[in-house]
Image 1 (spheres, each protein chain N blue to C red):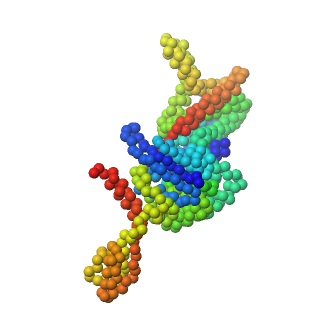
Image 2: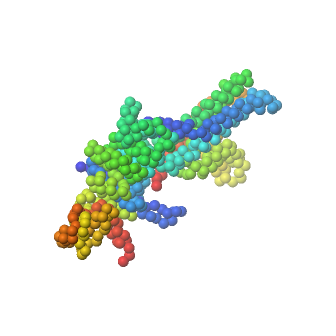
Image 3: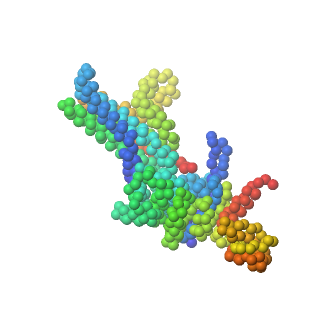
Length: 310
Length: 254
């Protein structure tokens, strides 16, 4: 099956001030994203995520390599007709109202007049902007503008939605709603490609992730395959008496419960045996596995140490 | 075509929601109204003074509107990053440039329609027939459309200040292009003469679109002049917009 997004050897460098020096933003990126996937492009600020997205949309031309969307170059109008895009920190025409704004974009997609009104109403309802249809954009908060940007990106029912930091500026309720929206798109067979440095969102949403650092791909794959399944440590919650010679590190919570962090099952067995004899009670045992954040920090740490001259 | 129309409509909407355009229009109309009283203080035909001042007001304030709206037309979209979402839609870059230009033409047409109507009424109130002014007003529109094309061209690759300077220089040079013709005759060297001839041919000749004196003095235009002047303005503007589209096609949006 043909991939929805295919990046091959993508490279982009920018000239410095007065044309002096060059900084490489994206350095030989290869990615393939299939239909119905939620794909997260993750990396710290300045990793090259936005540059990659701009090359995917034809806003920047790669110095080397190629971008194919539905097998077509991004300059192709046929490819862009099937895409929805939300930029990072969007700024839209502030003299328009949400309805006028969405009408403009619906016109650009050639949606017939009769269909525009219901589609706009539906998009506004989906992103929770009902009641604000006639408010000028300059009077809307950052979070509401972000929602409107999402409405713009999905109102023409695109097959691929490209979102640059979609959670930025949203409150917890908004983030939850956007997460549900993205999951709903996947259920409808759409592909979602988003960039983020908020790992919690990526962890909850993505089928696959790519970690980029200084323009280079550090890891790509299913989250389950990328993170280590071995327990990093085990945490035991104890109330009451705590043995004096516990093997691990202990921390006391404000409510008096103590958390004992042990490295392995052998240490855990010792703690579990010692707690009742000290007059304590075991409340919980929790095995802490590697998270996306751990993976992210590990990959970035590896990249930094590789770059450091030995 | 639908993309061009949608962008043009949005550009027009932006301009008409900006107070500065109303200020320019109000001052132009006030000047036309005042010209009725100024004409009382001068020697000569009062109607001619009203016509002369009125046509100049339409031209100058039309130019101001062109510069104010035109020079930031494309650059503002880039600076505010609204262009990112727009060009991510199924819109070709030349459609964006043409849409912005068409929107600016709509703004100019509306401004000139309002100020032109004010002048026609002022002349009619003086008891003279105003219809002889219509070709001059139409050619002011064509002249400003040509200047607007340059404003869009400059706006597509530079900031509003430089674009304003470039547009103003184009307007001045466009009205002085006859001097290259004169200079050519006085140049001693062949190379200089060729250069003058090339500049005279290539630079816009805005005087071809200026028939204000004929309109004020009720002098008939030579046969075919009006049509040829319109054709000149239209083809020149189209050529400039093609160049603007080519420049914009090469732009990258960092």
